[in-house]
Amino acid sequence: MVEIADAHSDFAGFWANGGYGGRLYDSGGVEDMLRGGVRLQVFAAWVPPGYGAGLALCEKQFCFMRKIIGGSDGKIILCTKADDLNKKDALKAVFAVESGETIGFDAGAISGLYGAGVRMMSLTWNGENEFASGCHARGGLKEKGALAVGELDRLNIALDMSHINEQGFWEAAQIYRRSPCASHSCAFRVKEDPRNLKDDQIKHLIGSGGYIGVNFYTEFLKGKNAAVEDVLEHIEHILSLGGEDCAGFGSDFFGIRYAPEGLGSPSDFQRLPEAMAKRNYPQELISKICYGNLERYILKFLQ
Image 1 (cartoon, rainbow, N blue to C red):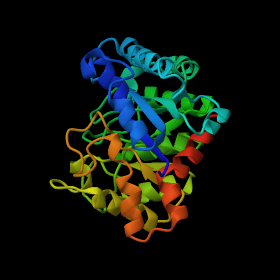
Image 2 (image 1 turned 30 degrees about the vertical axis):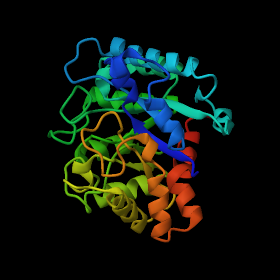
Image 3 (image 1 turned 60 degrees about the vertical axis):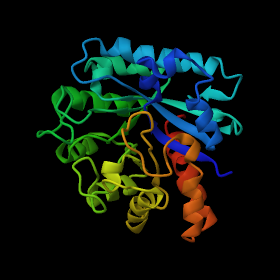
Image 4 (image 1 turned 90 degrees about the horizontal axis):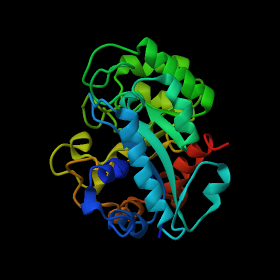
């Protein structure tokens, strides 16, 4: 079985909203990850736009995750330092937060997130907020957002550029001195959508030593009738721009309405390396895309 690393799952938020009827470890969701070969998973806490108590809901989601980790008999561990990546048989969980709502747009709260194990953060969802504008809004990085980017840089937390619009992307990139990522984003050249990355953005992420996790949402991949091969089309476009060490997966499982045929849950992940082999990808490249590239990237933030 090929090891899998996934840069974005909304499992934590799904749990906080009572997914699977409130059951914990034996939920099918985590078991699906293990059956699919997932050994490194970024779990993102997400707070809906306009929610008034974002930090409390964020903490609730991580509380759920800690219960799951604590009840897993060592099958899942929280990954906060480099040595944790050496636990080969365990699913390594990395905590992330999605959008400034999670901290009430208070850059000063980011240090507390770091102490709670968070190693990745994005600024926006799709609309405008107090940090910046998402892909469906106009405007760029705001003063509070610039402070947040500076704090992420200072604390060595990965800046996730998914969802932010082009103007905000480039303005944040001028401040952030480390390697940013787009944890769950596709290629605009393959499927035109404001949520997807333009080629110059992809090249910037590649050139800065970053990471791009291809999103499995059908609308971002192709539209209707997306399949496993459409995920590979986006990956291959990133590869064509020099992204052999940058491309990977950012499934967005538990957060997307429609997944490609044959990729309905994390248990289906092995269909991706199988499809790569059929397209004559070298084994070394398969290993990089499926696991090694995200491991390399995450390691930068576990020192």
